[in-house]
Image (cartoon, rainbow, N blue to C red):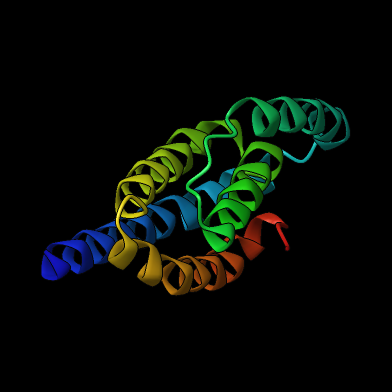
Length: 134
């Protein structure tokens, strides 16, 4: 059972890293090309960001994971270009669902705090190019 949980957690982290890596560089170029309407886009994104964070509040039950997911979602909704958001949101939902499943057991919950901290550290550097910080 413990090997299955670790395998699932590793798969989730690898999938998340892959999604971040695939969506990062090409979307950053698109973001640079679309600088003409950033002021209006930022206002709209901020409004959408507030709505998204407050409506999707499915908690994992591990503080580090819940904190990471909220910050990641706020960053993606507010800073990542709309064309790239789907891939990031897919990662977000994959993490949330997997982590909720892992959090159902004491063994899974014990490893999640460290795994979510690692995911947060990785996302900080990979989402930095979009101007996200936390």
